[in-house]
Length: 350
Ligand code: ADP
Image (cartoon, rainbow, N blue to C red; front, side, top):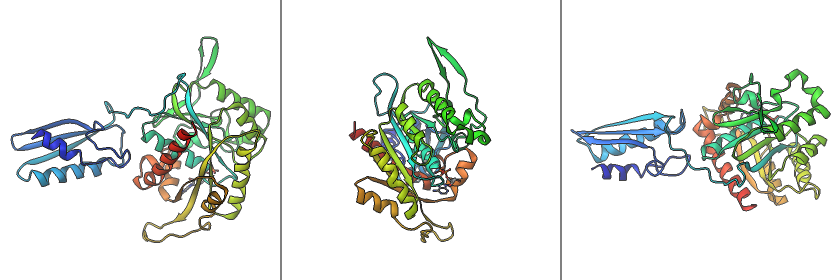
C-alpha cells in the first residue's frame, strides 16, 4: 500500500526542478493505516510558490485511487529540507563561474534581471553570490531587503576580508554598503575603482557556483577597470526592445568581444518585452517596440537567452526586497528557461 502511494506521488513533478517529488526527497513521512492516508511533504524553501499546487495535486491523486480512505497531505516548509547538490565543482573552494550582467544604458532592468536570475539559479540548487558594482545606482541591497547592512571586516590569516550580506540564500556585496546614494556621483573616479577592487579581492564569498556581477550601465573606463580586476567567464547583456537600446547593446557586445578584453558573450536577455494587463491576459502590448534585441542577437550570432514581459510583481518584488522569481510562479516561469540556457552556455564554454 505504501509502495503504491509512493509510486503515485512519483508521478508529480515539481515545476521548478522538473524532478518528481519522491526522487527529490520531498516525502518526509507517509502512513496508511485505519482508513487514513497521511503524507507530510517537506519543501526546501520557505514559501515555495508551488507548495499549494503540489499539495492539491497529491490529494486529488490519492483520493482518486483510494476513494474509501481519508486523505491528508500536510505541507512543511524550510528546515531539514533536501537541497539539490550544487552542480558545478570548484577546484579551489572559490567561485566556479563569474558572470557579468551588463547593459548599454540605464533603466532597462539590468539590476532587476540580475537579482531574479540569481534567484532562478538558487532555485536550481546552485550557490549564488551577487557583486553589485553599479556605482551609479547600486540597487541590489534594496532588492534583497538588506539596505542597512554594514559589512564587517575580519582577519583571516594575513588577509583582511569583508563579510557579504546574505539574503534568500544569496550572498551579496554591494558598493551601496559603502556609499550613501547621494554620494554616488563622487564615486565615479578613482575612489570608486579602489572600493570596487577591495570588494572584488576581499569579499569572503566562500564557495560559489555563480557570482553575478551587476556592472554599471554603459561602456566606459570603469568597465575596463572592473574587467581588469575580476576574472569574468561570460557576459550577459540586458536590453529593452527599442532600437535605441539595441544600438547601445551593440557597443556592449563590442566591448566584451574586443580583442584585449575577449570575454565570451553568453547571450542577450530582452526585458520589458511586452505588457499584458491582468484583466486581458491574452493581450500583449509591445510598448517599447517588438523583438529588437532578439533580431540583433540573431543577426550578430549572439545567443538570445529569452524575454521577460513587464509584470507588476517584478517591480513590487524589487521594492519589497524579495525578487519576484522567488514568489510569483508566473515570473519564475520566464526566468527558469533563461537560467537553464545560461548554465548550459557557460558550462559548454568550460
Ligand atoms: P537598471 O539596473 O537597468 O538601471 P532596474 O533594474 O533598476 O534598471 O529597473 C528599472 C525599473 O524598472 C525598476 O523600477 C524595476 O523595478 C522596473 N522593472 C525592471 N524590469 C521590469 C519588468 N520586467 N517588469 C516590471 N518592472 C520592471
